Image (cartoon, rainbow, N blue to C red; front, top):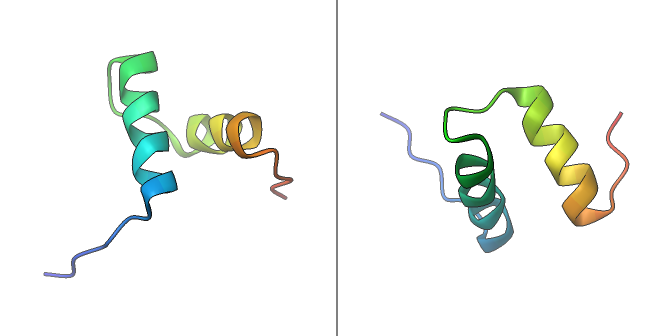
Length: 43
């Protein structure tokens, strides 16, 4: 079983998404939230 270590930023984003959507989130929701929080361009 492979384990993934999340950066503090990634961990915070996932926590925020779980609180915001109260459920498992989709990839599109993650990208949308990351764009808003990290001010990045994801193509």
